[in-house]
Image (cartoon, one colour):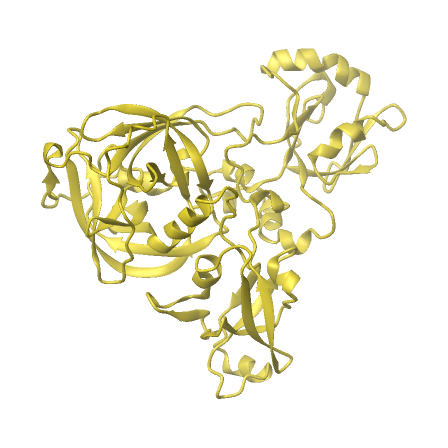
Length: 493
């Protein structure tokens, strides 16, 4: 599900606390926040020709420079309708998504009416550090501003809602009360924006918020016509604390830092730069890296070098890595680049775009994605097919060459053509009529050349082969579409 687990916690009853201060809306006209009301409707990856039931979410979002509204990407994912509502007057207008980044979990909304926010003074951005007190803004049903104070307890690099991404994160502590527009909230200090709430745990009273540096990077890129996103290095590394390993790879006693490169992802900036597994990263742009992969940041002290390479660096910039290889130090230049979800063999997310599929005589063919795996529930890592989870985890090692996607037979719709095949599900399709499938786009051409009068489908696991009669498949298409309410039997674009 694209919805954050924030909802589950926020809707849980919390202990009673002294009521936070409320500011009368009539005394603070043109408040620099608006309600955002969204109707979302996600695609159904089990039945990829359809969508799931629509649902609504409500948030409070800051108005920023340029008469734009800053929200989380989760809020507007797969949205059918977005509406902005003024806090003090109830005036409404439609809005559109101008820029969205699902990895950084940020989006920029543009009001349909250019004058809707003309009299609102936008919130400026401000940095924050551990120990600062901040305020979380909410709205009462009357439009009054509800202010809850919070303490920033930790600033660290952590996972964002999209599993493959990690960025800087503020962690705050406060007893937050539920209000309807609380899916996301602005975090403010001295009447300036320092972050956007993305998660709240009512049990521990911990708040996770997207911090200023990530927001500033997003807004800077969003101002250009060609949004480039946040770069990835394509490096995986482990801490290097084992004294015997350090001695084995040639780190002398004077060199106390460094991390061990465990993986170099295929077609990544790291691979292009010439990184190898077993390299030791000693510094980045002259900043020493300690044994845990941290560097000293002028704002936050010790923080993971991922913050430096992903947020303090922009796409196209060159990072200078000092490394140790085979006992000798050298410098490697890495050009920072972004890797889109479609660049993966198994997409880490498929949002705002329909899944590809092909129904062949009742056989439902799809491309494997993590979005499909998440249909198995919040515990998908344990409940989804183990083989597919393994593929997802190690795809950069397993799938080399020119393979673009993995085509699977997800399940079978019972028809006269699929008698005996009804129980088959979640198997990898390798060939159709002898044509190796690099993606689902290869299926139509493969079906043009039946073998000995039959379509021959080959799989990695049992059943190894399925045969279908092309004429019977074609003759049964109309009945198949009518029986299962399908408007089309394929979507490849």
